[in-house]
Image 1 (cartoon, rainbow, N blue to C red):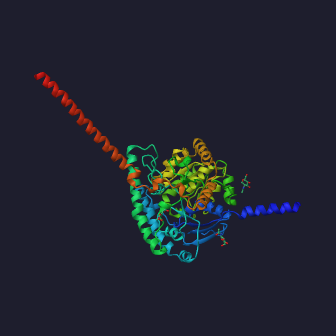
Image 2: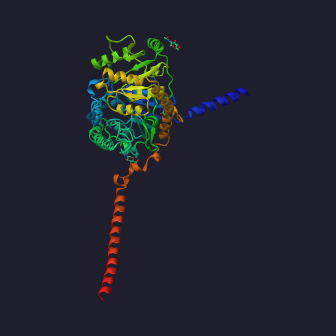
Image 3: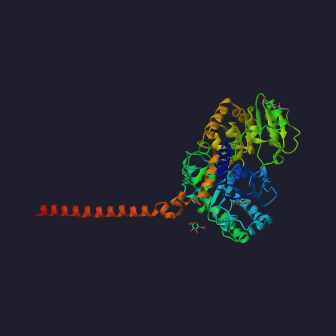
Length: 511
Ligand SMILES: *[C@@H]1O[C@H](CO)[C@@H](O)[C@H](O)[C@H]1NC(C)=O
Ligand SMILES: *[C@@H]1O[C@H](CO)[C@@H](O)[C@H](O)[C@H]1NC(C)=O
Ligand SMILES: *[C@@H]1O[C@H](CO)[C@@H](O)[C@H](O)[C@H]1NC(C)=O
């Protein structure tokens, strides 16, 4: 009897699990920046764990660490490890031209990716997908794959939304108070800031159409044989931001903020022994210095390195500097290391400052671990991330291009103060306080879109409206006409009546 109950229990358990609604999921990351992929890797791992098949078309090998995963590697070269600190001047002009820089990156990467043998062989296979996750970044050259498989699709963004993204979902993108990703003016904006923010916002939408969408469409047709899917038809957009850090803007239900997705459920791991010893022994605190994987130490200007080393030598704290080559003039309290597990270092209790370029991955990790940041933004969304952090009181911004010993010493003093550390801890608490973790949120929405076959019911009506209707231009014109017409009629009637009265008075007088 007991055995029977036991067997029945086992059977129900098994049947519950085998009834899982499992989907075939395709992921497309055409842009080779590894950090973009890394933001969403935990999502792919979790989807795999839940029994979905997941095919990942990208530049990053999953090395078998994604269950039920399959790689379609579109290049082996890490193309993005080539940016040079010396390119970036931090000027206004550079900010205006940011959309141009990412269009250029698109140009560089679309064609080699589309031509790759792995991709072309994959396209010849007979596959079917229930849902497609695709990065929304600098080009649509890979979106033809979506149309080939005719599946509902979801956009992913590892950084803040670009100027041209909101309209795809009918979400308001009013530049009077929503900062353009490349301008970094935070609200409330002055009159001139609003002028600049508006112009850049409009210009970047135009840049997208001319320099990314049009060339991408051509490549998509040429190499995939399909027009790119229309992003206006996307079911959902998962964005790596959160209002507790990035500020508030209205979002339609189809745009879901999952900021912190790559760290929220992560526990810091044990550090490599040499780094652990160095960090453990930093009893006055550890400063972690890394410019991310895009900017390499050996292109770091000599004079700037000397300035940093001089400033570090006067500090009681210890420094751990991610540096790929040797460094002769480093002081005793500086350790260099080629490979550094950033998240684990930032979450070590001795770490009290992060010196960073303001990439969103590192920024999010610092916010999560409650560590203040000394930011030296270089390009892209980094200026905006830095400004957001500064507004929350947990960062000091400094320009690498114009840095001096004095300015660095001053910035370090500010960034090492107890007040800023307190602010960073408070921000961390706000950022981590969610109903459900961003990872669970993302999993829920991916399965939701697959389950409801594109979930068209969460699409905003604004997406399908013509420009003049959305901005009420026709209604304003009509009401304007009514006001003018009635003013005219009232004016004419008054004149007529007054005319009558006065002409009668006149008659009375003369008679
Ligand atoms: C996932 O892949 C396996 C092995 O290729 C296959 O047997 C299974 O049917 C796939 N699942 C779905 C939902 O298509
Ligand atoms: C977008 O979706 C609509 C409605 O499902 C469909 O009629 C239209 O063809 C789609 N557009 C593109 C470019 O796929
Ligand atoms: C560092 O400190 C931790 C916690 O006190 C300890 O478990 C670990 O063994 C220490 N590691 C080294 C290399 O000293």
